[in-house]
Amino acid sequence: MIITGFDIESTDVLTAKKCKIIEIAAQQYDYNPFTKEVKLLSEFNERINPLCEVSKSAYEVHHISLADLKNCRLWKEVGKDFYDYILGSDLLVAHNGFEFDMPLLSREFNLIGKEIPTKNGFDTMVEGRWATVDGKLPRLGELCFATDVEYNEDEAHAALYDVDCMMKAYFKGLELGFFNLEQDNNND
Image 1 (cartoon, helix red, strand yellow):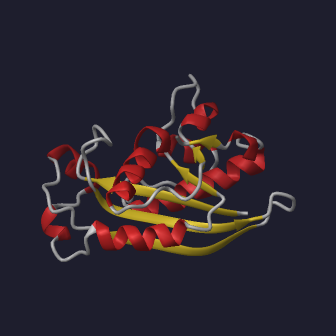
Image 2: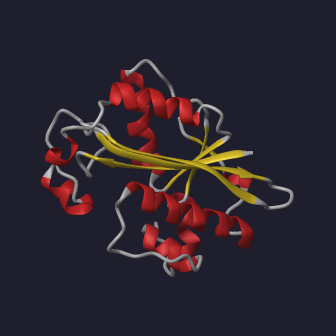
């Protein structure tokens, strides 16, 4: 089973409906649900020139400015490469995926004539309420703490770092029985 975890940094943090992707990262794994063997196959990480300003609130989270992106490729190129990268995935995993990452990715794919190539999605935030004492939606750091995955706030919000932490927590959650493959959700 091919499982791809991904994360997006964007021009805004408030809504996926109006922002643009400025960084996208993913890790692709071969996961055997019978033996529980996990093998990292590859990584994807690229910044994108959004051709628009990065909001102050987004910059305060990820510290990526438009000046940092001026020589990066455009989404119409990166998006096609990312689509090809995730094409064989059986499952897409994201933290805050159903509210932000997957709707934003879907909208940006539509702009280049593509659709998310799988309907199987898993949101570690939505399915991770067990990781918090009060059952609230966990931040990635809280999910990592609950699964004993090292998480450094100083490195957080770099897309590849967040994907790496999220996927370690996801596979640990599967191992511990807190996540299961039957929780896969349709990301329509």
